[in-house]
Length: 146
Image 1 (spheres, helix red, strand yellow):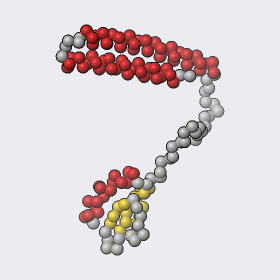
Image 2 (spheres, one colour):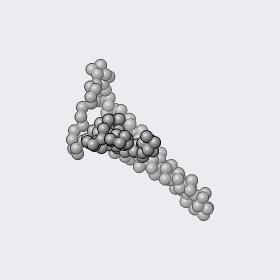
Image 3 (cartoon, one colour):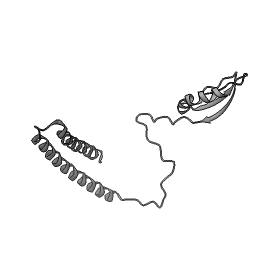
Image 4 (cartoon, one colour):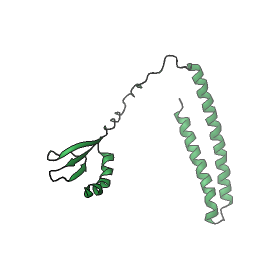
């Protein structure tokens, strides 16, 4: 019985990857926790986890949702949606222009501080990198618009 508690923590990581965890006892009374059921031992199921759903095939259409949209759910007309998309594009374009200006200012500040020790330059480099990441994210978001 003492050995059972020593083995259990070692087998817990297996339980996370296995679908079924068994507690098996052999004729001599030794208990084993495993993910493989054996015929020679008395095994009982401790836990069962169904396998994850298979990933969709490339190019396959997504399944319809299990819960359909209610009939009284508010709908947006096509022209209203186009107007919203236009507003969104304008906002993203404005943010992209602002980030581009901020990037140029940060680069100028970094260039002007070029003779300082590296420790003092790192925050300026971080600021430049932040603006570059923001610009990439905004470009990606604009690319995703219809």
